[in-house]
Each structure stands twice: as C-alpha cells, then as structure tokens.
Length: 260
Image 1 (cartoon, helix red, strand yellow):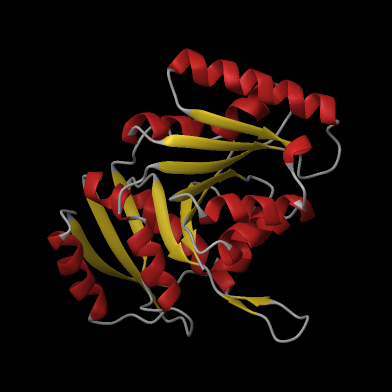
Image 2 (cartoon, rainbow, N blue to C red):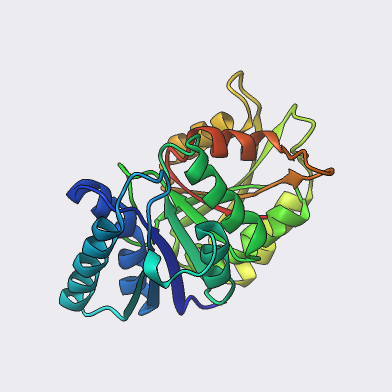
C-alpha cells in the first residue's frame, strides 16, 4: 500500500487548536508526497460557520506556503452529518487523521466511531499536544490475531516499512488479546515487506490493555501504536472491546492507528 491521499479533520479554534488539527496530516503528506483532503468543522457545536470558514482560509494559506496539494472543505460544503461526511471522504482516501485528546466529548466520539468503523480505512488518532512531525522511527503493534488487528497492520505498512523498529506486542493474561506463535510469524511477514520487526509477549498490567500497550510503547521509545478496533452492535446497544473503549473514552496519549 502507498499513501497518496490523506483525509483529516480540522477543528476550528485558536492558533494552537487549529495547528494541532493539521500538523500530523501535513507532515505525513510532505513525507509521502500525498494529497490532503481537509474537512473543517467543529465537533462540539460551539464554533460559528464564520469561524470554520476563517479556519479553512488559514489552512489553504498554510498549505500553499508549504507547497502541499490540499483540498479544504468547510461545513457549507456538507449535505449530511459530519461523521457520515468524514467517513465518505475517508473511503476514497488511503488514511484518515484526527486529533483527539478528549474523545469522551460526544461529538468527537461520534466522529471517531464513524471514521473507524464505517469507512473501511485505517485511522490515525493523534493527541493534540503530541502530533507527529514526520514518520515514526519506532512502532508498537497490538497483536491478537483478530481480523481487526490484521486490517490495522496492513493499513500501517507504509509506516512500518519506514520505521527503524517495529515491536509486535501480545498482551498475555487477557481474555481479549491472545498471545501466540502467530506473532512470530507476523514478524517474518513484515520482514518480507521490508520492516524490521520483532515479537514480544507482555503481561497485562493493572491499568488495562491500552495502558499496557502504552507502557510497552513508552519503554520502546515508540511514537505510534497500531491496533484493531473492536465493536459489537446488537440492536441499538454498542459494546466496544476494552482497548477500543478506553481510546474512545479518553482519547489518544500517543499517535494510535486503528482499523475496525
């Protein structure tokens, strides 16, 4: 897979809020020579249409100064709800990027849910206070051999081929994440794709699966985590896998690529 098109959500606001929304997408676009489709809208309902249009104008100026191919759309271009619109654009892109530090906010949570589960594309969730300035040198993969984890790994291949090291982590002592020899086989597969990968089984800590993965990433000096996103939807009730639920509830603490 080659990344040619990145769809990103841009949150209107003060300079810091606005910059955090597009810093990662623009940095990755520069690294890959990719086109950016930037959708400018608020997720909390507070920003006016004029504020969104002002942010869109500033974004266009920034892209032009940096020599990036960037299509900027504000809310006046949308015919449907923002989650549906973002998922629509993500379906015809290679990668989605959302800055989400407070994912518990309902608007942001709904946007993440639509992007992760309704688009069929990998989604990179980045904390606003720690955007990526380029391609990560080290990556941790959360591996449980589920279809979602497989999709996340393959969506992350453009990152993994560039990384100096990829650590495949299976969290043991957890009923949802199964360790196994498939992690070693995955390392061999990634090596054939040109990635430097190794496998590690990590016992689950008291803070839960996501906290265990983040601790492993911190110990390895990894800038990004790759994980499958799990959702079960019987009738109107939606029950998320534990790591997915934690990510939706509190946002990302480091760049996290998910696929549902």
